[in-house]
Image (cartoon, rainbow, N blue to C red):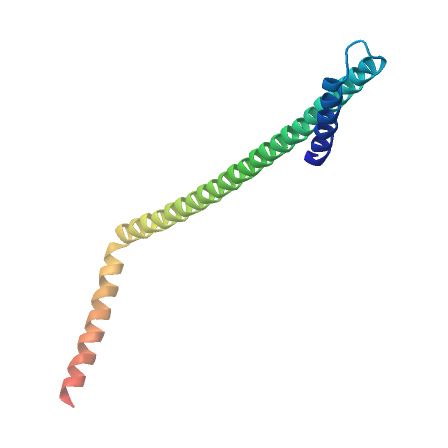
Amino acid sequence: MDEIIEKIEKRQDELLDKLGQTKAEHDDYKYIVDNAKALNDMKIAAIREDNARLNNNEINDINRMKVEVENRKVDVEQQKIKVEKMKIGAGLADSLIDAGKAGVFCWIAYNGDNVSYAIKSIYQTAAGYLKSRKKF
């Protein structure tokens, strides 16, 4: 695009030099002025087109960056959701373990006598085993 503008400017310079050499009463004067105006209009149109292209590229880059940021936000939100689900699962497992403990303690409290006899029996068996080991 810059090459086109440079070529137009080169032709404008030539026409302006020729215009400077031509008298206002000469027949070619109006022709040269019209051509210089046409070249100026073409140069302005080329510059506007180039600026519009650059602006569109910038807008596309900005939109692309917005999409990337939104995608990152979505990824972060998905990770937060996964973490929250894992927290809920861990809380549920913890609650089940606590319920199991409470159930075991309730059973022990209800059947305390049987449990104490069982523990005494295990202790006596172990003590007897240890005494028999000392004899050897």
